Image (cartoon, rainbow, N blue to C red):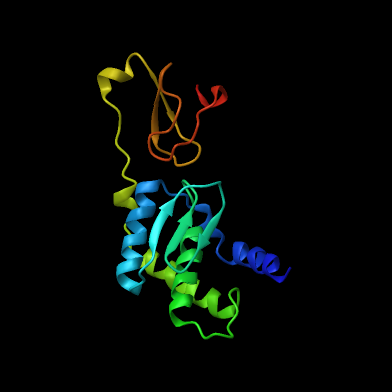
Length: 163
């Protein structure tokens, strides 16, 4: 199965893009940016199991909270469908080049600092709670009995992280 080797090489080549996970709203926002720029007619569907994506002639499907690499891979397939010759294969160097252009466009046009802005919790609530740093994103997290997740990246806080 030659496409498995392609996926392994792709994971190594685009390891930075595959490490950045997005929530569903950010996925939709980035997809709309790519859809307008590359003039693709596909619709985005979010759902399914983790790490799974699919591109058909009308729809792109990615999993909940998938990565930039996953979205760029499927958008590259949509662009490849638009430009495809009948005898062309899917996972080739041409697909990797298109995916590299898509990732570069995302890096140049999406302001991650603004979309991932970290807000400090209220000082009056800090008296009855503990503040810890999220090991995943480094943001300040307010930990109470009812709050166990990072508000910024969704990281689940375990008891060993609470000081």
